[in-house]
Image 1: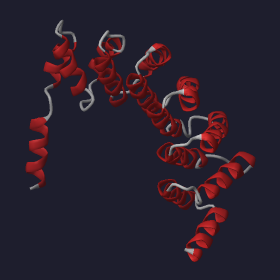
Image 2: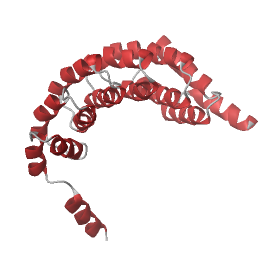
Image 3: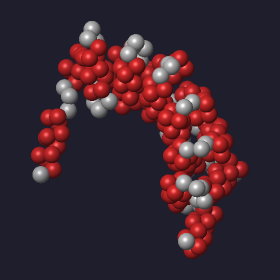
Length: 228
């Protein structure tokens, strides 16, 4: 049965060769179909065309191109994505760009992601909060730059889902931190998040602390569980 399901899924996938042809079609509707297809397909040959589509006049096409580049991350897409984030007026495009930059896991994206987390609309902040966590393990310097920014965002962010993504990223970044002040500050922030007014934030903080296995965090969870 599983084999049949796999064959069915394969048959339903768009044809990569056909989609590559449509990416350069003069017809907007065909370019749109192709860009959306590469949000699912992984094909390196599509990347130069998708980069060009980031600057298309149609915002819906720019959105699809951004998500497709997130599905097909590559180093040479990072600078075009950063440029598009800085100049695109459409929040949905910026949201897709921020998601793609997180998937690229490139240190060049750091200033844009930090800017998105602190200044952009809520839809963009949501993805920026999780994309920053995808930069974990790139370098200690990045971790120690990002963690204070995430903690600051958690203290001012009014929306629970964004705080949840901040908690997830804080947990990811803390995994590679050596014992020291940044690590202890991150743990203290996660422990504080156990009592966030949003239940989703509480649960994400609990999961992050359990994965880290920090004695302070585990003790805080145990104490809260005994009260509850």
